[in-house]
Image (cartoon, rainbow, N blue to C red; front, top):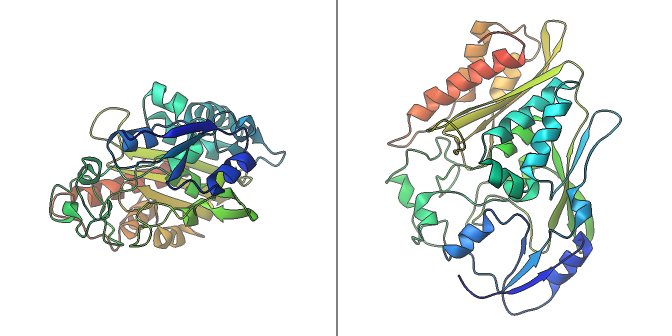
Length: 333
């Protein structure tokens, strides 16, 4: 690991000021450190300065608005959010999406350290990249996984890299229409989580669009409908605490017996959490049945182009989606 200078910041404004200082090297923020430290140990990140955000206590706030919306400080740990979401699900069933997405995301020790903001901004887990090869994601010319060991990679292809987005929390937040507050030297702006996360490009070889000198300060989930229900289903290659082979976050709102709102977001299948808009549209105005759920699940995987070793993901994600639709509608799968 390369030597670095260390300092701390007590708030977002101080951190942004430090980020803007000219130091002749790269300055990075650190909170839980569960992703950044592994990148630094592997030589994939070599900041010359680290700014510790843990003293910024206001960024750890977690509160429910009177209308049922939820404000989550960016430094809130996954463990704290899981506890809060589990409690809220008794009154607002849709928040079960959050609790379920976090529960199997990592070990209890990691969930106690990892922050919500850091989870959204984590880098891809492709083994070619993490093992230090000069792949496209690391600045090279070729994605070795495309023709190599790609059993855990994306089935929706949207760019030069075929790594799958690693976050469990991100699909859940997108299914809940969550947005982030981003603070920069010029002020604050709001952005949907769905738009924050984007496939990497030649000019931005990372999984998000956060700019240099910007900080996520808060995540906001709008007030859910009283009739909204949600589930998060995940398939792993071991019993718990592993990245998703495929996952789905589903929100279904019913008016009587008909669907008035649907959100279906797949994880583990693309560079970003994959919004299944065609499947959502197929559910609107309809009464959920087993046949309709199967039809929508098939639509959710339209356009998938599996690699040599991961065609199983298409069938797996389709079945998870079918089950999630029925469970979110209060039906047996």
